[in-house]
Image 1 (cartoon, rainbow, N blue to C red):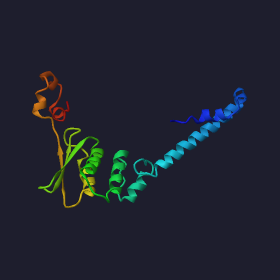
Image 2: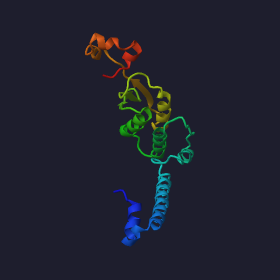
Image 3: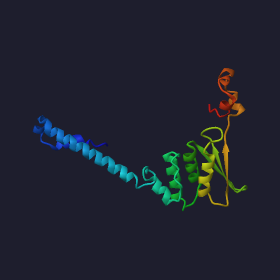
Image 4: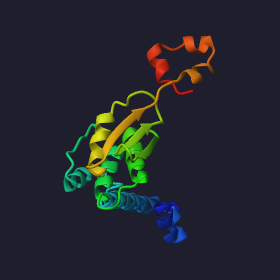
Length: 183
């Protein structure tokens, strides 16, 4: 429940002050200061945790030995920090999927290929080769044990899906657009 500081301050005052504009103006200015103070305290507290840090995220990256890359979105940078902080534990399929989902910004499927000695990450939330594939491979390499290889797979528009389109619908796309189309 959101607290209305301005109203709370007015409620603490005796009712006869409601008629004095100067007094109510002073109360409103005090409320503005308290609201700003509360907001700044919340922002400062958020910096203490890697999953919510924004202005102190470079400090978290430095602690984890990650080179700061301002071109990456905050949620991706946070996911990388989080994966490094959690890296001391067992690497499970769910952990790998969570990191890959965040880095790609789309759904992935992760499977273990025991006979091939690799982890296969398939991008299913969008089609085509993802621009961030090398970043994903680099970050997964930090997470996945060194004796396992990493295979990144991508999905494409297939002929069975093409059969569901009319010729007019298909004609609206270029070939490059059609091969990454998700119906």
